[in-house]
Length: 318
Image (cartoon, rainbow, N blue to C red; front, side, top):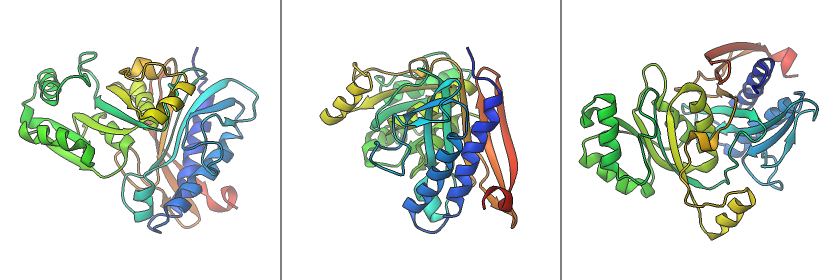
């Protein structure tokens, strides 16, 4: 089974409208308003689609409006059943501060196709395509993983570029990367953009090595399942989070998840830029129109493309 291609443009429109909504708050120092600016149009557009959609990766619980919450039913409730992973505004801080790499993103699968990951931390290693399967392992030390990657890519270790989320919890990883003389590209936020910096015709990085959000890990896996590339993730859970994970059907709390564990079947992935970044250009206000740019993937159709659309303000946003 695969997702009919007619849904592709509908889902592109969802992230486009969300990105336009968030773009009105770029540089205005209000993260909450920016997030709401993306959430409301995303929910509105998803509810127009003839589908029975369920949010399996969302931003909050049911009482945490206006977030798109885990378990929320979306669409007209007629049509095929889809699992939905959303991050209406990846990079709320970037948006509020007028910085690059903020975007609206969603991934869609057939029912049961996405891992229901709780909103907790996940250890992650992400690498690009055309590499031996299961090359990286979270249980390896940093030196072993970097050596394996360098050998597979026929590079010197000193030529490897690693992207790392700049957090104190990564001090030991950073120390090892420095000892190995690996080039480190730090990011302050933007777990998804950082992880996906290892793919593309000329990827900026060879490896993403960080502990970030579990839901973001599933969204990254959705993109990688379409594009190529590898991720291994492991949830980091305290006692309270283990209870939440158990409710989502997770029994093995130490399990290492590869793409096949997180993504099953067909997937559509859309990321529309709010501010310009590596995945997509930001929203342009052209006076009477908005210009938007979206990075689009559809696994079964082997679609990998960048889409630019124009919206007339007076027709679409009155």
